[in-house]
Length: 135
Length: 67
Image (tube, rainbow over all chains, first blue to last red; front, side, top):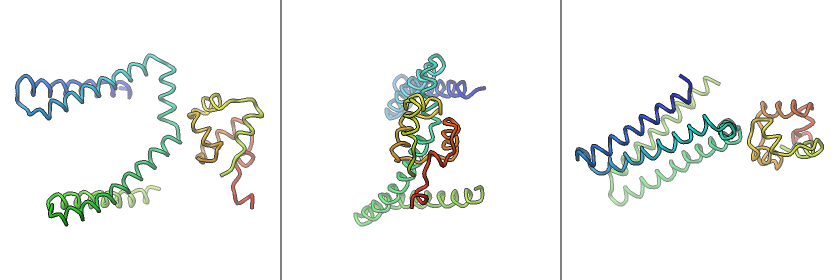
């Protein structure tokens, strides 16, 4: 099955999941309202994506524009650099938050942030070692 | 890295839009290359050189060579 068809199926299922969550919350009252909001979000996201997929399949100039944007090396470079900066600033902000929360006696929240930072650093170092072997 | 991309493109009467389409990159990439804000990958550099039927060194100038 080609990539576009796979994406169509995925987003359709996503939309159905969203509708299901909304119905379970609003009609059957089985879930709390948080899930109804999430369900609406899923439906909107899947609708947008399905419209984009429809345009991609039926509008050659739109398809060309999307292919160029997705394949453009400068866009990929910018996305990777943005991800790298996000990771870097997330660690710094997390570390500062952890200290501030510990001082303010929010020990549990501080610990959770600490574990998240540690896990990210472990994943980073494992990825680095693996990529070093690969390349 | 400095380059003569804009100069060569103008000599051939090709606009950024056409060049971008022919190389399957965005027009912003061509603009960034010409302004020196972005350096191409070796593959893109080869594609550009092949497009203009020139050697890479005739388009892209490695700054150590200028010293």
